[in-house]
Figure 1 (tube, rainbow, N blue to C red):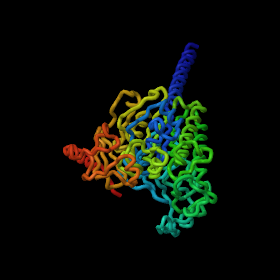
Figure 2 (cartoon, one colour; figure 1 turned 90 degrees about the vertical axis):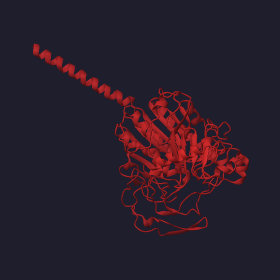
Figure 3 (cartoon, helix red, strand yellow; figure 1 turned 135 degrees about the vertical axis):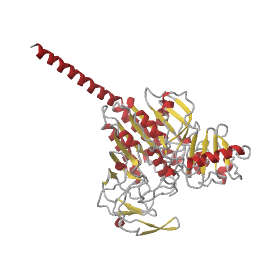
Length: 511
């Protein structure tokens, strides 16, 4: 009898121990923060009202997000164009270590099988992972023949893939599901074929018709259609893209629960051209159709935040908001017409190594961890997101993983920390390079321009051209890049050139 009672006692202790372990596991799962990255497309630093008091665009949801988290004033995308910045964000590696250019229509994947993404890191810790929206990082398309389509677009003869040039019979590999994501939904890229919805690795409907950019059945609200010719689904309506992606993202969040952490990478196609705000957003800004599209983009952010609150997930979710590069060239005319400066006070636009090409909005909200309404002036890059996420998830990264990434978790935890990293490389195309070293910015050419600035805009802003072989700016005193100090500090130029070369020598692949 005594032995029986002892065994019952031992069994009870074991059971209590198991229950305690199960509680710890469940508690750990609940305390793992969900992570949502909302990545805008071609949004300028000055498009946000909280960063530009003179903005002609209301951005109530982004302003609220900033008031509830930390806003970084010196944050940068890796590139001044799309695909490279997305690769850098997801891998923690400067884009130029792989390539400079965007992925063109039916282009191959930018990834190598050895690449580790944010999704891979979080999946290893039990996170559910999803990518919704714009991918634009390539797929492993099954091409049957050379492009057989011919068209004259903007006065130039072009060839393009017609539906019969592509093998549609198999799932499309090389996309998000091969990069650590459990789920994908999107149209790939709003202005590139194929114009069709892809869910995971399959088309919801095969694109059997041809999108002819010279004869689209819809009109843009501003600018021109940016479409490339190629296969489309019958009746494809670009005005349905952003609303559909919004609904899918909200639905994904509504299907989550408190016990399983998730990572959502929502890559918006807006406010990238074509500028196509839906009718209910027309007239919501004082900056024309682009301003209305920007207002709609802010509304989309609001829908995501609302969904998190409705599910009770907002208190344990990190929300990161940023943009892949600066605003498109339409921003020059917009500034002159509406007095709205999408680039803010910065010089240059998308594609430029000028500050306006890569100095982007960057906001992080993490309830009870990041001080509300905090502002950091620390220099950060989007390549730093991976290491930061890895540290939050308690993942040790091997040396070859995220080679350019540096965690800024300490800054998120302590708003009084002033410095994160000293050095950031700025680049879009292979010949023009910028290097930030503390307050100093070096550019290896006499201009950081690629998007030609109109003389009228140059006159309005009081810009002058430079004639020296290279440029040097004190960004503490001159963030607008008006005063070239290269002749004043020649010794600094030598140092910066050597530092840039050191960075390039770590693994620059010109391919």
